[in-house]
Image (cartoon, rainbow, N blue to C red):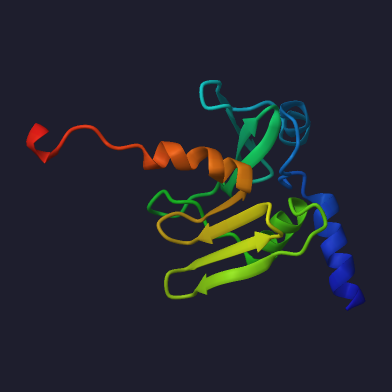
Length: 158
């Protein structure tokens, strides 16, 4: 048990790419380095550090959505899977000390959905891409209207 705790502490100290919900742009840049791409319209920064790609979305200068994957790709160009220990470490880094609870785990689909209190949600899937998403409820509430907006045009327009 002590060895597992020590390993967890060492991983958290050695991994500079630990993602954090709630950090400002400046804090994210200090953690991940200068962004490799910035989408001002969408308030997103894209970083590459320590073998990870990290996308941060900001609302009122606080990170409210993270998308994390390995920078290394497989033969088809998709990110390599995150290990269980990487998933645990990344989730713990953004939980603000609160526990994550698995809500749905579908081994056949290669996906897991977690919640941490009523404020955070996380989703990891190995299909079609090996990407971990960590989001605040506020982020999800803000994107729902955009996703529900009616699509214009019909099949006749093709």
